[in-house]
Image (tube, rainbow, N blue to C red; front, side):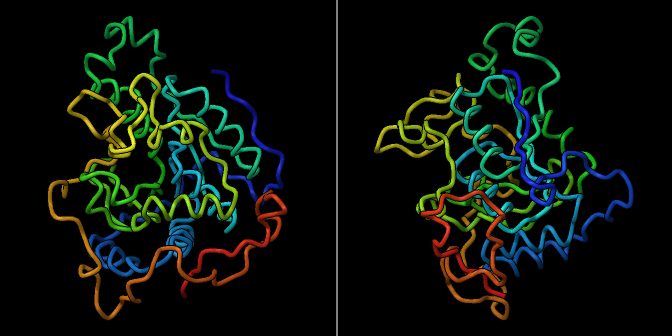
Length: 309
């Protein structure tokens, strides 16, 4: 599908499309990452985002798959006016509703979400690997259309933001707010890692965040169109992904900790813990600029999730 142009908001609200190629940060010492992973365990998402933006500056990027959590992340980045590069993996197999959401997010927040595409188009892949590879070898298809493009997109950055939650899959159950990404060899920052599904939807409803229309039609988790089906009321939210296959992840968030007991509040440093609070507790440390987002007037005065300092 042809891509569209970005929004027309002021440059202060636009995201960077090109990472710097000089004065790169030295790789984060592992002990520093382990410590930060513990420290941020009780931080609200806004504080984690501010820290990441200050620490990595233009060497920070956000990869969104346009899930509900990704939409929340884009809203937070815009509200906090953080100069974060934003991109998505355009596999060429996304739902029409996903492309529509892409355009709506750009219009709403005045950002440009750049497309990162595979080396081969879908017809080219079919000629080289056979038609409908996702049905015969879904892991190989994801490797070609998602993992390899992401690996290339992350070059030149020192850290990337994700929108994963611990309670989504077993592979994500041990994710930290800040950690080292062994697969892509850079720092991985997961501001929403402690959020639950109700937290996400509470934020979306409170702040009138655009989201994929398919969520209202039985699709709680949305990926490529051929590999995503509706989910029953009694099924796991990711049951519709690669249905009938022994596969629950596309390979972007694989974890060496998969299979271990999920992390808990007890894993945090006691002297740094700020209490067993909800991720949505408290108020921002600094007021959100009124023009940071183009919100509906009915939601302009809605209470903001708190940020502790």
